[in-house]
Structure formats: C-alpha cells, structure tokens
Amino acid sequence: MDTTQRTDQQRSADRRRRELLEAADRVVLRDGPQASMNAIAAEAGITKPILYRHFGDKGGLYAALAKRHTDALLDSLRAALDAPAERRERVEATLDTYLAAIEARPQVYRFLMHPAEGSQPGDQGFDVGKHSAPLLRRMGEELAQVIEERVDLGPGGQQLARVWGHGIVGMMHAAGDWWLGERPCSRAELVRSLADLLWGRLAATGDRVGGPGF
Amino acid sequence: MDTTQRTDQQRSADRRRRELLEAADRVVLRDGPQASMNAIAAEAGITKPILYRHFGDKGGLYAALAKRHTDALLDSLRAALDAPAERRERVEATLDTYLAAIEARPQVYRFLMHPAEGSQPGDQGFDVGKHSAPLLRRMGEELAQVIEERVDLGPGGQQLARVWGHGIVGMMHAAGDWWLGERPCSRAELVRSLADLLWGRLAATGDRVGGPGF
DNA sequence: GACTGGGTGTTACCGCAAGTAACATGCACG
DNA sequence: CGTGCATGTTACTTGCGGTAACACCCAGTC
Image (cartoon, rainbow over the protein chains, first blue to last red):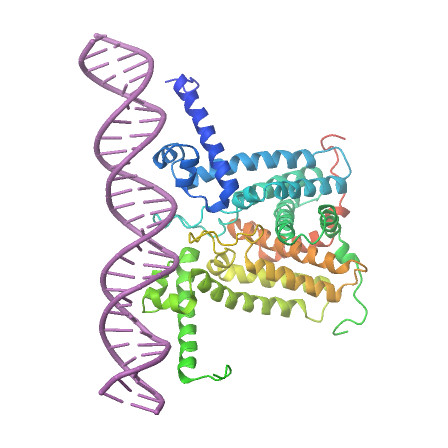
C-alpha cells in the first residue's frame, strides 16, 4: 500500500510506457499531427487497446508526448534566458534557440502547436480560449516569470510581465511559423529583426516621406 | 458560352450559396469549430450532398466561411490602421479593434484560427508551415504592407516590415488568446501594455535590484 | 500442484463524421 | 413531348476514436 513502493511490474510498466511514447514520437515525426492511434500502435508493434490502457485517450497520449518535448524545449530556453549576459544578448539567444528547435524538427513542432481538436465523445467543456497550444501557454508563463524576476517594472509589474510574456512568445511563434514556411531570410537575420522590434525600433523610426495622407 | 453571362439559375445558385454560408455561420457560432457537416446541412434545412455540391469538401466550406469573416475583420483593421493619427494612436486602435472582435464573437474567432486539420482523404500537400491559420497570415501580410508604406526603414526595409508584420500579429493573437481565457485585466489595459512593449519599454527599463546572479 | 489476481495482449465490435453513389423531382427550352 | 440540368433525397462506404469481451503469462499462496 506504500505509494513510494515500486514493484518490478510497475517499473516494467514505466519502461513500456516510455517505449510506447518513443514509438508515437517516430510516427508523429513521420506523419505529422494527424497520426492515427492505429498507426502508432502498429509502430509500437501492438494494438490500440493497449495504448488506451496506458494513456486513457488520444488526448492523454498527446499530453504525455507534448510534455516531453515541451519540457526539453523549455529547458533549452531557460538556459538561454538565464545566461549571465546583457539583456539583448539573452533575448537574441532565446529567440535563436526556439527557432533552431522548430527548424530542426518541424513535424514535432507542428504537432505541439495543435490542441486536442475535435474528439467527438460528447461536448467536452469547451472553454473559450483553451485552444491555444499548451506549449505556447507554458512558454508565455515561463517568460513572464523571468521578466518579472529580472526587470524592474514598478507597480502592476506582475501583470505587465505576463502580458509581455505571452505577447513575446506569440511574436516568436508567428514569425517563426511564417519564416519556416517561406524562408525569406537567414535565421540570424530573423533574430535580429525581432530583437529590433522588441527594442522599440518601430517607435523610433520616422514616417516615410511622401506617404499617403499627410 | 460567355463567361460574364449570368443566368437566372446562376444568380439563384449564388443566393442559395449565401444562404448556406449563413446557416453554417449560425451553426459554427453555436457549436464552435467542430460543427459537423450534418449539423450545418440540418440548420440550412437540407442534406449533406448539397453542401458538398456547393463547396466540394469541408475545407471548401471552411475556406468560404473563413473568407467572409477574415475580409470583414481585415476591413475593420485597415480602417484603424489607416486613420489619420499619430502612430501610437493607430497602433492602439488596431489592437483594440482586433481584441474587441475576438471578444465579441469568440466562437467565430476560434473557428478562424483552426486550419483544415486532419482530413483523412490521402495526404494532402502537407507543407510544413502551412498550419498557421490563413487569417494570421493574411493579417501579417497586410500589416507588413502598411508598415512598409508608412515607416521609413531604409535598405532591407521590405523584409524587415514583413518580419515585423507577422511578429506583431502573432503577439496580438497570443496575448489576445490568453487574455480571452483568463481575463486578467481590462481590454484597455491590455492594449496599453502591448503598445508599451512595442514602444521598447522592455529595453528601456532597468534591471531589478538584488536580482539573481549579479 | 491447483487457485487466484493483475498486467499484457488479442479480435471484434459500436458510434460517428466525412464523403459518395444512385436515384427522384421540378422546370426551362427546342 | 422529351431532353437537359440543377436540386433534392436515401443509403452506402470508409476510416477513426474508443470499448467490450475474451485469452495468456506469471507472480504468490494454501
């Protein structure tokens, strides 16, 4: 009855679970986010019900899979974010880390950005606003915390930090997504451009001469 | 054979098409993005095959529906963006317009942000980077164009404007999505915070005293 | 050695949604 | 009248998420 007790069976079950996750990983890497449970089970050399015993439903498998990658990516980002360097350097390193990750494994990244989706069994709660990928939310909260810790924003700073955290993450995500599709420039250029944006260059630059209106 | 010729039948087909779109709109507004073709057909008082005759497949209906809303939203945004006012005022008006729209009709907004998704019939092209909602892409391009027209960014400005367009749109989207879910502050505060971010307040604010490291 | 319990595995099925024949009907035009 | 054509239907196929029922293996135990 001791909860910390780990029997052989429990350990082997954990190992099995990890194997299944790795098989799922391979399928997602190959087929993208619409990988079916059947395909994943086949890749793991088993059949569907076992997957369901381990993960409950597709959302459960999704969550477990997403957690692995999200944790890994967040670790990298934290490292870049907490480096002992100037703020601009840290920001650029963080952007570059994220972009390098999505560039290296676009299928995984694509998978992570999609929530549970349809799932026909009865109307699930369906809270509005829940549709953004958990990865984005977690990154936003993480960044918010770092900002709040390290930047002196005065009163109301906590809320400001959270807005900024989610905003910056969204900027990074959307720009990265677009860049991945069109590849209009090098990664370094993209990083520079985004950092410039965050550094207020939009506000600092003058109007174009001869523009419309006056 | 004249392509510009419009027979009575063609006009009535167009009207029918518009009626179907409005029915679909109603269902999406009620059921969210997982609205089934059956439900839409029932709402329109007809049956599935007619929908398929008009729109090809679910993606076609999705695209037609999305286009209507996207066009409408983009018109509002253009109005805010092109107003004869200071840049900061225009930016705040644009942010507020977007946020007001998603606040007013969250279901529609949620629908717009989701691409075709799975669609099991054979692997469609499946280009990486195609997964971001068309609305986001279009808003990004639109904003990029406005930035390029009105801000003097020097050489390489076109590319910079595009990066910024997509980045700013992503910031707006992610922050809006998070805000819609948690409602941590008023819309006006959110607008102010985001505009502050774009105005470089992150770079201008000093480090926190007594922070970690040194 | 027989009995029992839990984890692993299977086949076969349900429900549901997308998409598709194949058939029926109303209506213009020669 | 018949020929074309758009509009509408019912009834089906396919594929996926998810589940029920049954079979096996291997511990521990009397």
